[in-house]
Amino acid sequence: MTSPLELQDIAVEIATEAGELARRRRSEGVSIAASKSTIADIVTEADREVEALIRDRLSAARPEDGFLGEESGEAGGTSGITWVVDPIDGTVNYAFGMPSYAVSIAAVEGPVDPGEWRALAAAVHAPALGETFRAAAGEGAWLGGQRLAVTCEAPAGALIGTGLGYDPRTHSGDLETLGRAMPLARDIRRIGAASLDLAFVAAGRLDAYFERGLKPWDIAAGRLLVDEAGGRSGWFAADGFGRHLAVVAGPALYDDLRAAILG
Ligand code: IPD
Image (cartoon, rainbow, N blue to C red; front, side):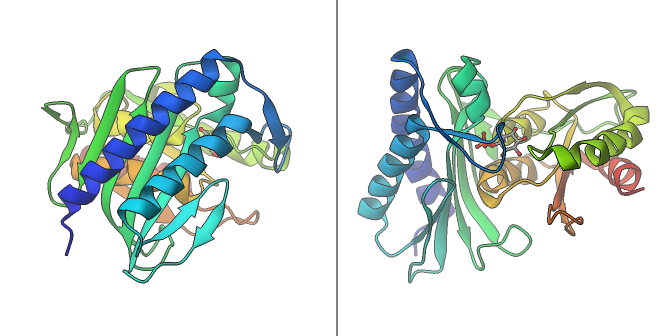
């Protein structure tokens, strides 16, 4: 059986190659290929090309494993392991020339559902930031040679990341939720790439992060980073728009934040 560390190495190698392709395409100019659910929910030609590269590399390295990608959907495997991939997380940042975008690759075991799977390995590679976050189950979360740790003391005022859904019908509800979290916050960040929000919580750059409506590929790699950095994470029941709530934080803040958000 392949160890989580071996899976992590595969994720890092492929995410790095994919990130270089994304960066090269960015420097050649970006074309928005389509809007998906709403005008804010875009896909570029690069998203598709980068996902195709990742899919090819994974099927060569791990032919028995399943695959779930943001752009090309799901293919079952026979090993019980599935690779969950966001080729360019933070596509809006990418399209606008902001550096906060990342290739997110995770290997998970069990049902392909963030509430049920067991994450084994993760890589979040941000080519324009020059950073690659990685984790393997039981082996910690790392940035280069630095082992990552979430904020462990209760912050006097927390720096909290969040995101707003792309569907305008959800905005007032999301702003209400944000209002409930504000008493715990020093300030709020909307970074625009869920995998980086999660990586930044793992690295102690944010104290917490929450968002409704993340997809499996947005959360798979980053949540393992947080868990392996000593954080707590939850994936809560869907709202009336079918959007699950993700909450992550250091142990001293998690219960208070979850209680504030859930009302
Ligand atoms: C999106 C980003 C964004 C989050 C959205 C995600 P994408 O992913 O992570 O920060 O608010 O919920 O869908 O579309 O850029 O891959």
